[in-house]
Length: 287
Length: 312
Image 1 (cartoon, rainbow over the protein chains, first blue to last red):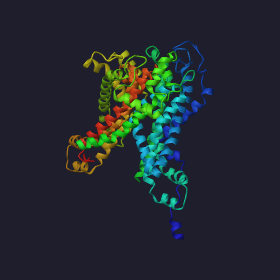
Image 2: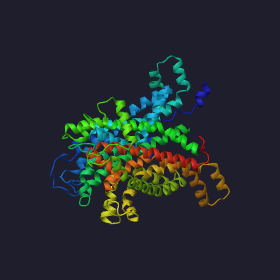
Image 3: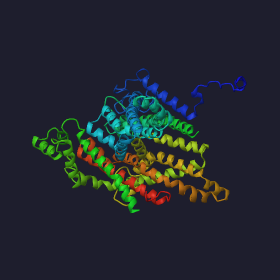
Image 4: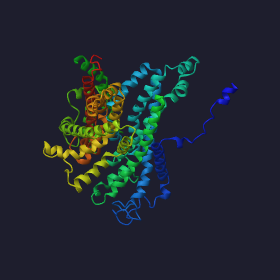
């Protein structure tokens, strides 16, 4: 035994996981962290008040005083882009968090019990996925009325199904495994088996999907904002900013360009993280 | 084949039932009295009573649903408060334009994604592959309404290559008018198509028959067209079908941005004017469209791929 221990290779030096992550993952994480910090610090670092009117006149092009120019009401666009980031990141986060929790819990129990709960969930999934995502969200917001709260309700009512479908599929594959059967034979309660033994083994694909869902939610939130159905003034959001500036696109394109670039960059960083994590998961599964 | 189609149709029935329940419940989500919301706050009590009776609002929910189904079976989905016309007629008039736009966008989307996916798959894990994937990853996050505005500014206002808005006078003129909206939607859906096609092509490239083909000394073009693309494109049919909802979502926004008179712009306008009966019916029609396209792609897949048993 002592011979084995002497020839055992030395334990590799612990490397900070971030350093071992691929370049896209690192770029994505640094990028989204930077945006989150900029958004959080908006009241401190933004050069102007987001609602202050008539700064240097309306529709001023980008300059040293106003890096992104000013909008039709003379508001500083850089300031508004920073403040809007707070709401757009919130849209992505809440738009993922609520459906994720709902979908995971429902998917877990349906997959664990199989039988009729799974059959019912299967039919619900079929029905909800028959509707184009944005159409159903729009229809629900149309009925409830415009506003961020109603947007969150609509997103929650529609998006949980995607998470439930993923988790249910995973749970159906895992429920017959030895460690689940062992937990059952030890007389553990269903809740304990589901949350302590099943959940950790099925949650990863749902979390990976959450990344692309984050992008989808930001785009949906911006689209609703663009049509006046999302965030309501005086609060602002990138989609609302684009909508407000669209009539000035020919004479003052910066009003529309900068909020759009903010959406593209944010989505890009989140997609990089999502893709990288997805690749890692696939590789782990394959090995 | 008939047995297969019948089987598929049978599977659709519970989905249709569920869709009808969701659409029926939509108007019931309206806070307060839906009849007042539909007619506006200045409606007379008589009118409100009439709509309440038409919707059966004072009856139990299951009776209301049966009334809804009864009306629906006669094609009676109510009248638009704003247009003073049957919502069925209003929507059906606009369906052809939307279908044309969706098809046109899908074709452009394929023209963009197939060559890039093939290039990326053939040169997988090289700088070419990484660059293509990176560009398409960036494209995913472009809001379609923003892209539409930017493309309109560049290609309609600055270069005057395409007309801005409307659908023209039919035929080629209509296609020309719809090019910019279709291109915008195509860019919106191309990342999903590119990724799926790349994955399925890589799978085919790793197959034994491709290795055998290389060993036999087949010309690269023959190998690519006759073996790889032919087999790689088959699962792609279902990818296009599965993403029709994404395609429709993009179309709805873009129709409104470019003023295309389709069901999408009708839906957005109706939401803004609180024309609830139209919102309800358009939602139903678009869900039907998704179900129909999924059925058609299933059938096409079964017809193209001999491994899919038609008896299943």
